[in-house]
Each structure stands twice: as structure tokens, then as C-alpha cells.
Image (tube, rainbow, N blue to C red; front, side, top):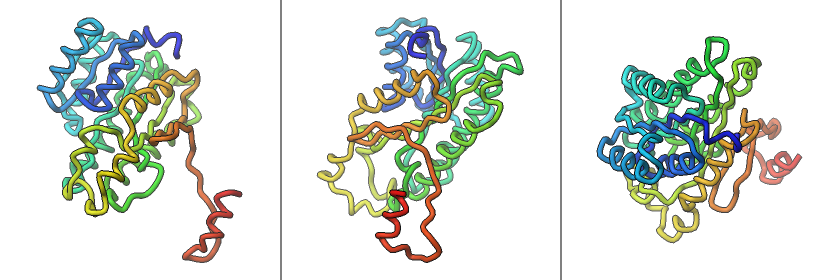
Length: 274
């Protein structure tokens, strides 16, 4: 895809700021045309103007949309299709981390991703007249591990990862012309992380500014990983894990820890290395 990205049309959710905005910038820099949505009309309009001045007004369009509202999301996606002619890269990025509004977080982080994926699936599938395409869903490093500070957020990101990976396993993906990929970034140096407090995560007293500084990744680093993922020649099933000091593709595996619980540390280590 790296040689043909300039011909690609993209729909991305949650693009007004933070990582979503950086993904848009990376795509536009490669010559893509993008339609992006966000719930914040002011931030969305400002980002649209900024990117239009940089890359041309014909290449970027903002649509205000709450992806937890099914009918409005469907309408926004159709508007994007009408504007671009077709969409061949769908990026489901919209999400929040706030344990105090857990129902909203589940609707946004998981239900919204499922709906966006299915909208793109129906639009892209070749057996119904589509041109094929790629769907990238944004999970998190907490989609690959557990977190007592963000158990509900962690659950939504595990769900995104499992949902996307499962779709990638379908026997008809090549026939339909579809590919699925997952990005799992670590904590990024954005407002989502900078503004954490006792409402957004649990046990916030255990988080120090010094400790946070050691794990935060620059937005540019995660943007680089995102662009690496979407430009793979064969993306289907790829999971790209991007903490501060790594950029590794990985897969989820069931590890046999034996018949006894709790598991002795040496037994767990042995099983992990086998």
C-alpha cells in the first residue's frame, strides 16, 4: 500500500485532536484524501481549517458526529462516501478513558468501533459491488495486558483487539477484498493522559509525575507506527504494539500454566518461554 496511499480515501473517527489528528496529518502527507468525524464541532472545524491550509481544502473534510448515535454515525459515514466517492481505509479511532462514565465508555470505545467496522465492511466488500479496503481499529497496550487502574477501559480495548483479530481470521477475507489491522499504543503524551484524575482512573494516588514521564510516548512516535501499519503490503491480522521503547508486531496466545493455582513464578516463566 505504501506506493498507492496517495490514491486512497480515508474515513477516520475521533480526528479533531491528539492521536487522531496526528494520524490525519500522516495520511494527508502521503497524499490521501480524508473525511474525519469528531463529537467536538469547535475542535473539528479548527483542525479541518489547519489541515486544509496545509494540504488543500479538497483533501480534508470534517463532519460533526457522535459515534455512539447509530443513525448519526451511519449518516456521517454515508456523507463521507458521497464526498470521497468511496472509502478504502476506515480508521476507528474515537475513544475515551474515564472509568466514572463506564457505560458511555463502552458505547464509544467498543460499540462505536463495531458499528464503524460493519459500516465499512458493507461498503467495501467486493461481493456486493465494493472495491475492497482496509479497516484499522485503535486498541491500546491495555488491549494486550491487564490494568487494575482502568479495568473497564482495559475491557473495551481487549474487546476491540479480539473483535478485529477475529474478523481477520474469516475464511472469506481475501474473497471480499478486506484487511483488518489493530494498533495498540502505550500511553501517549496527549490531554487524554495528562489530565487523568481520580474520576478517570482508579488508584490515581499511585501515579507520580516522574513515573508518568517514563512511560509517555511522543505523539510523533505513535503516528510513525500507525503509518507503518497502514502501509504494510499485507496488513490482515496485524497487531502492532507501540509502547515507549518498542514497536513490535505480536499475537495473542493461550498459555498453559498447568493444573494448579496460584501458579508458581518459575512455572509461569517456564511456560512463557516454551
